[in-house]
Image (cartoon, rainbow, N blue to C red; front, side):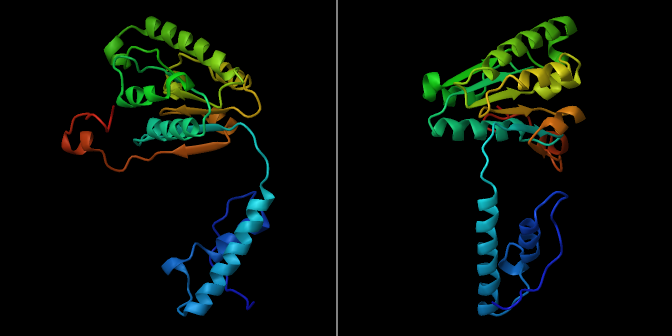
Length: 233
């Protein structure tokens, strides 16, 4: 096979040599430099070969710590996508919502269809400016954390979602060491997703996957559009 010209490197530190080759070959489409069909086919055939080797290198399984944070919208939505996917594989899931609890979101009602496979707890009473009682907020967060730890230690749960727990950390209602100790309770193949703005650096360092949602535009801020069913709740 003729040599394929390399593209710019985009792989992070710690990536394997195959990761670098994959980045150099690129994703194809109009990003590939080849104009002719045969040259393009050769590039993509090489990319396919490299991808197979990369997948073959990664053969471990482990319970993952996934953090969804940032100022942008979609953190809870991303975690609930994992919930739906996990339930679809016939596994059991627990969701514990910190802070939230003044209303029943649409996703909670929809997911009732899965019955005993899903446990859902909204154990807060709303935003701090709604509750206006710091010590009660702190007490409710601690109760939610106790419930969370019982699920984290349960080998029957494939996924535990701690929704808005990052906010509880940011507000000082939970300690980082407390959360890290809870995460250590998990059986080897149990995943946990932690959502909310302001995830502390120590949690990010302990995570296997971190996604930061960046706010670019928001209809509430720019257009005065209120929270709507199906979008916010």
